[in-house]
Length: 504
Image 1 (cartoon, rainbow, N blue to C red):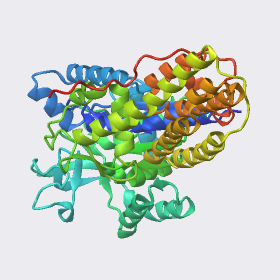
Image 2: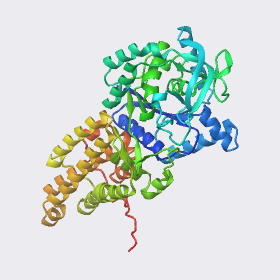
Image 3: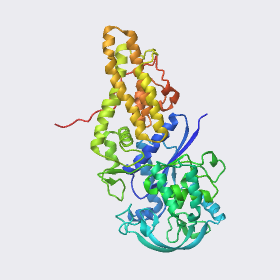
Image 4: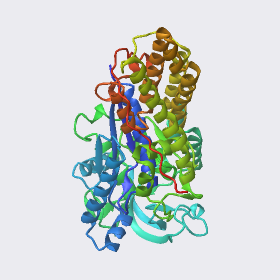
């Protein structure tokens, strides 16, 4: 029986257009979601928009627009971008939606009923970029280290507070019992150290900001944007209506390193306070940099997402980001590396392999994959590589999963040269020729299924050229383990990864 798998990404602020940093996270999560579907899971994949808070309000006002009109415009842009990047999300949530507010109100009611809120006055530094208060020890030369171009402001106002400090022992116990709760491991160590050092009670309302969900029973306050935002993962399940338990708790939250504390300390503390299950896991990807600078609006990085898409196409960009930038640490984007991987691994690698194998089947055996089931060295090596792939992908190490798939591509291209089908055809060794071509077809099929989460459009084109019916992504993992293609009618595909013309 298929298992369910609920995966989410961080929801993006409605303060500007999507950039390459946003895309990296969504593409990575999409790769995981597509892999889980390939393995037979029923996947619920959530992305969305964080549309409340001071930063969003300021962006709307700076652009001369009403708050809701501004967030509508930005949400439309993000939705169009994710569609262009072939993100296979099954839901898109906005925190201004009607379905979100009841979940926020109910969670607050449950926390309040347990006595975990209190009223007080907050005095401290506030970074609008992070939408969070900062301790003086967190600042760098008096500024937020993640938003050095923004001044932090000293704020004093009456707030409602959440007794986060009381949940340290329970969080540490959870980390101890679930050592894979936060991955990769250095991030688990980081959050454990934060909690061990002692958590602060946190202000969870704003008294002077009207662009937010009103605090229940006290409309002079609005819910703090982070307390509002993280609840999206729960509201998307239908909470508090019956049936939400079919999806909750989430299997995996995919986030960036700057919001680790909110997701691995505050969010589980909120859930524990409301007597609700915490998510099963959190994956923290690294930063993508360009010339040493992180991709973000505030950092002013000039490479646009559209430039990157137009360079070699959507699939090539997806592939490059997930192969070049390790999914468990930081990595650098460069046009030179993009061009190099495109030519060597896509055009000269996978594209060339698929084209030459299918062309030989068309030319030597009338376009029909031979029925030969003889096990050749390429088949045996393919089985071992398939295991390498699943080991990496099960651990969300996407760069290593892609590396395994392209290891088989390199071996298959080498096998073509070693077996020389053209010579077998010329000498009339039909039995050996059939065995070689059948083995090569199986290798191309395996690579195509493994590459599908990275290259969903191009792999589908190869699948159809091989004679596959329906969607390659629905072929099932059993087919990857034991591909049977005998009798499939193939055609030679059009060039999938054309090389750009170069000026002399």
